[in-house]
Length: 121
Image (cartoon, rainbow, N blue to C red; front, side, top):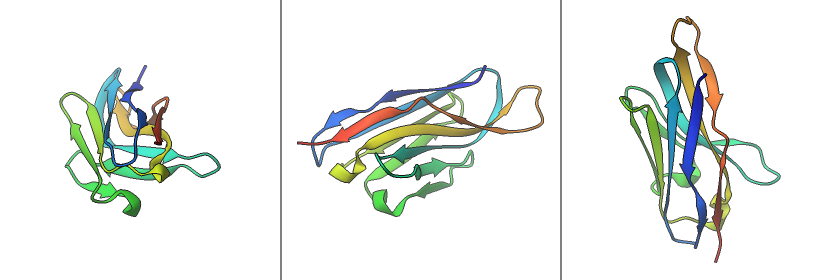
């Protein structure tokens, strides 16, 4: 069974930093895109950052220059370094990956369980 296991998150003051990590486990042949989404109360889930297996990255305009995504293809992990955090970054953050399982010709989108990030003084 393929799972995305997240770690990190928590409470931080405005201007602070946090790091989120996500590891993909299970019978995985390859991982295409890995990334992070977030959902604040009363809002839709939105893309924060993503990275293809070739290293092409994409960021939401609201986090450009503050958040940085990196991935380790060999370890099947993706990390989101969040700097200069603002109150409006408060949300549940979800790891996301498009994975091609072993012995399956199709790829599927997987989600982590979500981790809370709260930016508050």
